[in-house]
Length: 138
Ligand SMILES: Nc1nc2c([nH]c(=O)n2[C@@H]2O[C@H](COP(=O)(O)OP(=O)(O)OP(=O)(O)O)[C@@H](O)[C@H]2O)c(=O)[nH]1
Image (cartoon, rainbow, N blue to C red; front, top):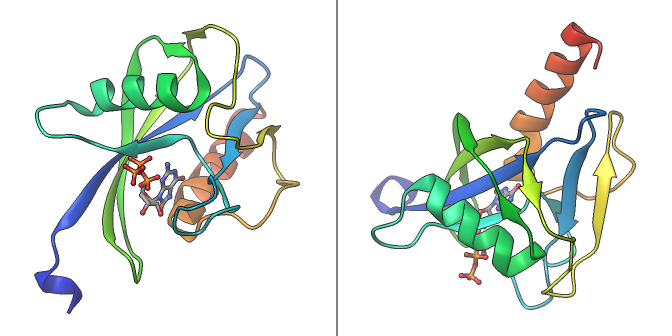
């Protein structure tokens, strides 16, 4: 029963390039939904803040060090494998060269996306981002 399950807290990074493009990457082999496109990130470990977890995950997965991470939205998604609470952070600054340390693929995307399938837990945020870009004309 989902209401008795504990949430897995997840920090997710929306890396936004100066031209407005967003970074998506594929989930590595061996994980649930392997090959699906997602925003980079991962589980928050005990004692970590959202920003600390995100910084650690992006070094581990992509080899980049992020600057300030702004928590933007919190969403939940109930998967068969986990009930997750996703802490979405916008990130505008990072340094280092992108290096796919888990054998993923990466793609800078604008709307409409040209990659699929995307992890269902990311759908609401993609809708909000698309609406925002429509308003700003980014
Ligand atoms: N990184 C990321 N995770 C997402 C997104 N959307 C979404 O539902 N999730 C869910 O959040 C959870 C993230 O866990 P993960 O397995 O990627 O985290 P991790 O790298 O710490 O995993 P590990 O410690 O098992 O290796 C997964 O259940 C995943 O399905 C997204 O856009 N990005």
